[in-house]
Image: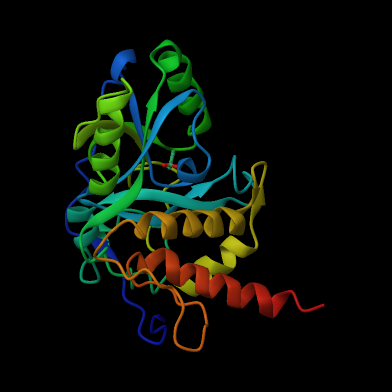
Length: 275
Ligand code: BEZ
């Protein structure tokens, strides 16, 4: 997917994000955390259960800068955040006076579709009650670069739910409802590290060229892509074979933003790392 740079649109938002941080209260017996980025492949400590599933009403985007994990204050990398779907839809080209972040470059409209079935896949973690407060402190610190805490309704993957119910009959385990309320960390459009829409080629190059205390920014992208592939395979609506007839790896259009960035980053990485 490419964007036409010859006629750069000027992005704007016709409405503002309505997300506000919640009151940060934790019920230790019922502390669930939704991971949609690095938490998918790097779980928090003291997890009791890892549950695949999805949320709706959001779009996952590499629109947050990172100066403490995948970049530095001098050269921030890029990491994912969640954008409210209604806000994402309102980003249009027709009124630049309402732009959320005046620093975004030209040609900034988002060329990638929202997930066609409206699902943002991720993982919900149940934290051991005796460690709930400590884990919350750990996550608050780990995700301090512009993220605030919110709550979302998480739908458990139906196959996982059925299997869990079956196994619960024999062993007494955690009760797993089909829908859970989870704590989640979001970089909302008003936070200082929010970048907003970026040209995909420029964003992919930026990711390849960035690194920070947690490692290469591109590894964050590739790890996220791999872990999402594993989650997408759970969704019966998603094609499970990711190779075309010639055996070449095929990128699912399902999370087009991530798969397109992976394609562009690998291409750029190969072009610039020829020894
Ligand atoms: C995550 O889900 O991995 C995550 C994303 C942004 C901030 C904190 C956690």
